[in-house]
Amino acid sequence: MKIIHIADTHLGRAAFQKLAEDGSNLRETLIYENFSSAIERIIQERPDVLVHAGDLFDAVKPKTKAYTVTLECLEWLQEAGIPLVMIAGNHSMQKTQHTVSPFEVIARSNTVHAAYSFRYQKVELDDTMFHLVPNMLCPEDYHTACREIEISGSHNNVLVTHGLADSIRDRKLSTVAEFELDSEILSDKFDYIALGHYHGQMQVAPNAWYSGSIEHLTYGEIADKKGGLLVDPGRHEVSHFPLVRSPMRDCGVIDCTQEGDIAFAIEDQIGLLDGRNDQMLQITLDFKDQPVKALSPDALKDIRDQVLDLKIRVRSKETERAVIQQQDLHAIDYVREFGTFLQQRPMNEAQRAAVEKCGLDTLKTVTAQHLEDTA
Image 1: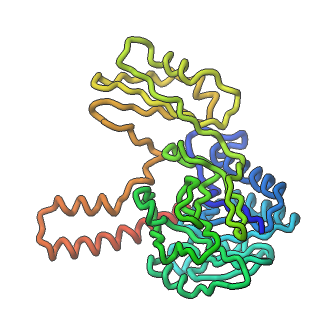
Image 2: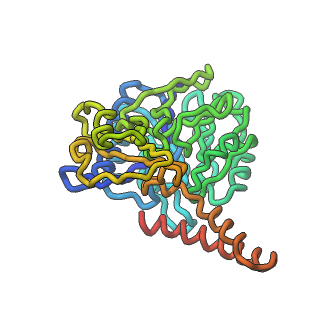
Image 3: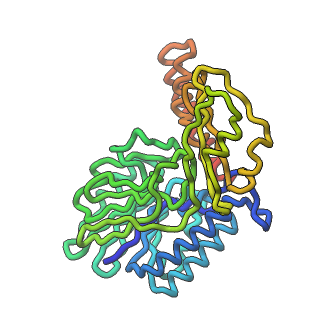
């Protein structure tokens, strides 16, 4: 069986300030267009099954445009006779059992096999048994689901799930309902494990792969390999499958301790642009131990007019690291920050334990509700 594995498409994600011709956010529009082009490319490849390992949408309450793009692509897949196997990830899962899942709409297609109700499901397609474990409400629910799995002796067995492999826990994204997947879940009894959540394409076990996201969704992913994976679980073969995306490029570091016009140095380092309006560029200004010099608002107007976004990072002795930009703020671990805050407060252990329990429970609840209310 030939499978194409993708994940983390985050339809509905908006970023930057540029607008498309119709007044919509340009980044959001490009993500829709690139997703549609990616589905067309997948159809040309004629896989037996398309697997989406979570976070189809950026939020549990998708924008209307995100729905219409998805439904159109589902029609294309259905016409091509390509079934879609998918699960809910932590971004597009309902955060309580009383919220309706967005998958209630798209799962009505008879060629879509979707797991999104906090329980294990299996789907048999030709010679392959797909074991679907969507994002769960609690970490222990993954283990409960995996213990229900019965490996088929007459099929290839493919696990599709969403979470952070414990072997890369240092790359934690600190998002709501992000849970670690250990060796009981990422078992060698499966012929292939299709993972979603981590946005870089990566192998984390002999049989387990993250396809990564199709798009560079933050500048923190600038070095990540993007696209999908072409998989033959029977032969245990996995290869990179390139897909359409907006380019993101690191233009390097400029030594700002030398005399000269910084804006001119930036323009020189970036070089000639190719006329595309979907490029995202990053450049770093290194002042070392010298005072940071500000650029005038219009200094790089010509470049900014030609690209989707230009991110300027600043390094100096004072910062000792690149300044965090607004689009990277989701990476802050608010739970850890709360724990650090408590350690600095004068209170006894009993008081600290009580405040910590109440505070963490409240923080998690409010964060989850905020994600649903602002979707």
